Image (cartoon, rainbow, N blue to C red; front, top):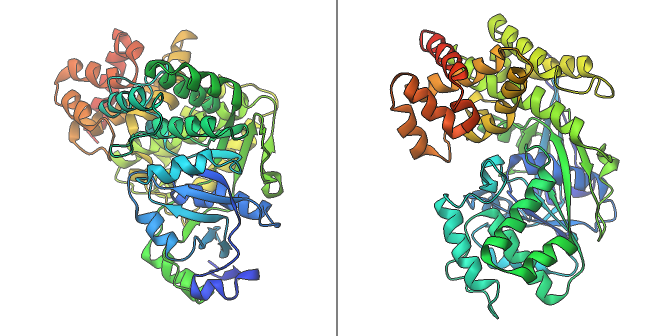
Length: 474
């Protein structure tokens, strides 16, 4: 196998060695969820689009400040290592003008409120929206309840009390939107880039729900009238960066980059919605703007994300650590193909090139030089099963079929939960309690975390119990 590295350093001859620059673009985009995927996707697209250096990003971390500390130490510059099956290519990206610890809620509020900020992008993960199955704020979540109390006290106050600032992403964002209303800034676009169906409408509903529950009619009216919500389908596999990757980047560039990201050559971004205050020319990087995003969302969520979730638990049960290892296993591959056959029955036959898409996914999964860890994919499994697998299983049952492939995915997750082998999940305590229950009672308790309708169907409970038992014997 050929292993070559090409480094596209263009105008960063000094910056790529010193980690400093003087030409950061003015901040016009606020981003919540500074992580590897954002840097390989939205920030990469913005870098490709912004030759005029007009669209800087202020990117805020989630639960850890480390990414912000690493990036700020090198003025927001970082490397994207694009890894194909044959070689590597390195590009220095400079679209992040500010990298900020997410705990600095004051900075986030000021950035969202700034008149020159035109849009906010989100990669906060499915669980980060803290919404219930009905799409409304999950008031049973202690963090949401605490943030609602803060919003009730502060949205109508003359000044925000940030001594105990909101903890959840949507509550922080709503505070920023309210601050924007107060200063009379222009209209704003909010762009969700997480793997949720109709993510723009879901984000809108979450913010409106928080404003309603907080009793702030002025904030609610502003969100409804002056904030546009853009739905997206996003796709680019971004595995965890290893020390070996960091060394490779240093050898290619001569710069000791503390925050490189590794990704695959494939990238896809489909967007639907309005940008009332402008946007970068993301189409220069290949982004597509469509009137109806639903078919693209469903294709990606069902075929890519759904099969990832299946492999995360079923592949791990067979001793595999990565996607490439799992798909090389004929048994796991057959399970993936069976799952895809279920999924395509519920996708439009026209316009999505489903057979070609499936073939491309296999090629991507087989790229063993992309070390996409199954444990990474399997994190926050309850939320992922809720949006990726449960709808397909219910659709199969409604059509009179057994949904065996979807049942297998859930059964593998149940078996892993009972063995105490699941990756981190934000409903950890509830998950542990449910997994401790024995027999079908325990299956019901686990299914209840995913979908009440599944938990209330005895035939589904029995099928999942059988699938889980099969994985417990692996």
